[in-house]
Image 1 (cartoon, helix red, strand yellow):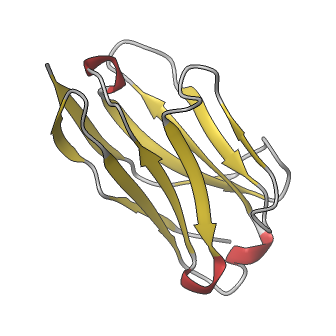
Image 2 (cartoon, one colour; image 1 turned 90 degrees about the vertical axis):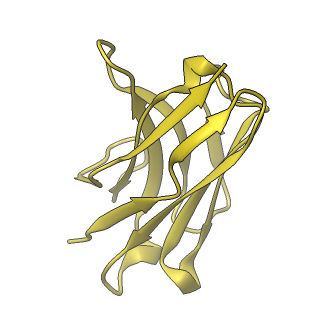
Image 3 (cartoon, one colour; image 1 turned 90 degrees about the horizontal axis):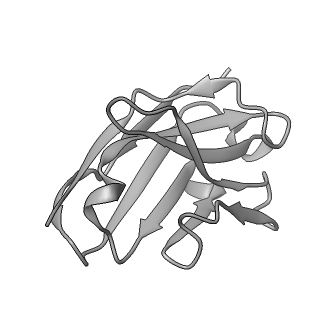
Amino acid sequence: QVQLVESGGGLVQAGGSLRLSCAASGRTFSTYHMGWFRQAPGKEREFLAAITWSGGYTRHADSVKGRFTISRDNAKNTVYLQMNSLNPEDTAVYYCAAGVEFYKFDYWGQGTQVTVSS
């Protein structure tokens, strides 16, 4: 089992950048594939990006491709989401997730709020 804690959210102006972090507990972090999702008020949860346990393969949703980048540091038990060129439509609660199968996530963090002002 793994526990996830997101950080790095906050208020940013349109065009700005944020880097989200997700710290994982446990010594098996490097065996989990990781992902980032978001959920805006009144909307369904949206997949953003995923990365394999080794970091050797990543996938990004078309809606954020070229602006968001997922990465991980297994030595620090942390996965990151670098977000650039933010716009108000990116306002949401952002969640990280872990799973033993790629795209099948079993563990979720509590989320971190990102608010982009125009």
